[in-house]
Image (cartoon, rainbow, N blue to C red; front, side, top):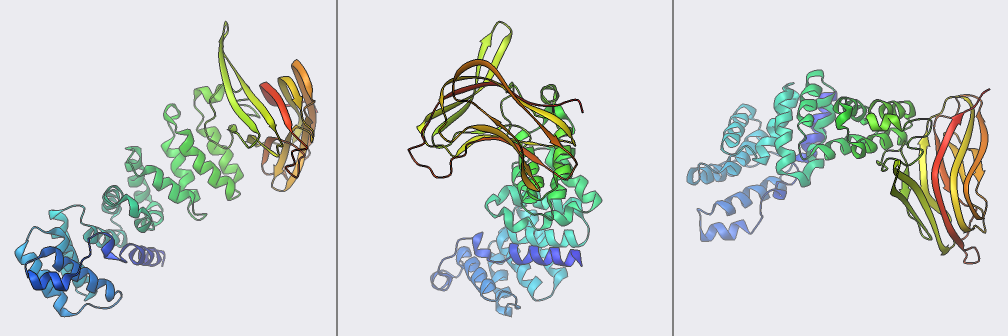
Length: 404
């Protein structure tokens, strides 16, 4: 049943509108001027096939295709359309033979590729199916979504998964699209998770931003345990040395785009940046938050957290210069599921240096599935009566477990 559904979906989407692949003109007029015009013959065939979608083309269409082949025997698209006509007339054996000839003339002939891909999937020839998908994805990248419905079925076959994994490890140009397709469907995000574990088994060559897409998809679908596990299992050596309850707490690493790393982005009225400078002890990194004299509701500083039950301390080590926050400024930890505020650490106004602010909080049980730490204000309406100004230079934000 699954095979039928997958193939039906693929064939309906991928084989509708052959004119997407070939130029369509006024074939009747062109053929009347030149009966040997191969382009006009092709356009006539395409127009007739599209007009009769779902029905058997009339016998004359086969004659038009045969005529085109007679005068241009190495024209692969003409053979592909002849194979399509035979397929729709129910002569599958003859159609398959014509498709194979078309592919021998041009391995990128789209009609033959699509039909033989469906045949390979139906017959369990996963190596052939993956090879055909590879060609389609490379040759017709704009139509990736048309061919993609074959992906989940292929990956759910043991040998199909291994074939696809081997091709993905070769870094084909369509690899990002392939993974994004799996990330985008709740029914296939488990396949993306498995592939990311296998593709990043060598943590010396991980792709953080690619991983970030799958991590976000897992979080979006409530698969918090899987997301955190994937993050931990794909940490490289530099990542591991900066890991803890809060990742990259001293901003030593450039943010990678993964949800369990910092997300830093400027917002209206506030500039957020990671700044580095060379010191006698090496490179020193700080997070700079500069307010620009405007009302500020949101501040682009946040990170996902995954904490077991226990007592914790949230701390921030910072310098502050001329800070004015008419509606407050704070770091907070929010439980995402179920949503509630777990902790809040207010940042005082004024100017001061080498200040460490702390607050404690408790997670009594494991009912909170995922948390997020962020920076925010209590401003509701963006009125210029509440202008934020000043600068924060943050050396470290940390979450530490305390004694019970």
